[in-house]
Image 1 (spheres, rainbow, N blue to C red):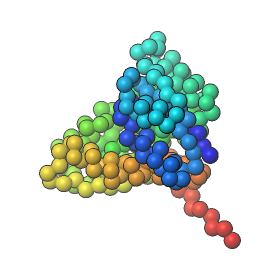
Image 2 (tube, rainbow, N blue to C red):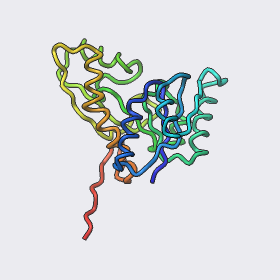
Image 3 (cartoon, rainbow, N blue to C red):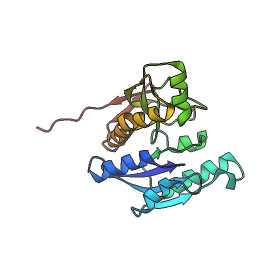
Amino acid sequence: MIRIGALVSGGGTNLQAILDSIDKGDIDGQVTTVVSSKDGAYALERAASRGIETAVMRKSDYDSPEAYDKALADHFEKRNIDLVVYAGFMLILGKDFVDRFKNRMINIHPALIPSFCGKGYYGLHVHEAVLKKGVKITGATVHFVTAECDAGPIILQKAVEVKDDDTPETLQRRVMEQAEWVIYPEAVKLFAQGRLEITDGKVRIKKVEKEN
């Protein structure tokens, strides 16, 4: 069973999807700590209601970005976290943090990377850009986190249709329901099973060996 730590900034709907998958027995793991970048994040209430440890660690409370990164990494390492999941975390962490959890930290992005990704593409901004461009297909991508925003090895992707009458809000909801809440728990499951292998910057999903 793997120990999962979550980074949050808001409502935590993707955290909830992971927790629900654990409850169903799909993921051999448990979320043991949830850290928010700000006070009042509803994701903290989701965690607290299940008896999961929570903490608020604000970047503004630290002398430098490096000090903040170190404090976060220390928090997770002290709790023997195997996997860190970004669950609506709105900050970009530095290389030192990423290096300490290399290939053990994943994020979900509400578009099909490499489209509509990188600095500035988050939340509704992604869906606004999708609609402005007029693309017909969008979706979500789960990827390993690297020091470069949204540039880590891709684990899973799922496509979602863009409709003519979509607003950023309706498209955001459909991407969450049809893609994010489906593939994020699946990626965590694959990690827990030890089935994700990175070679030359690409993720290969190892097949399950059949028992004789």
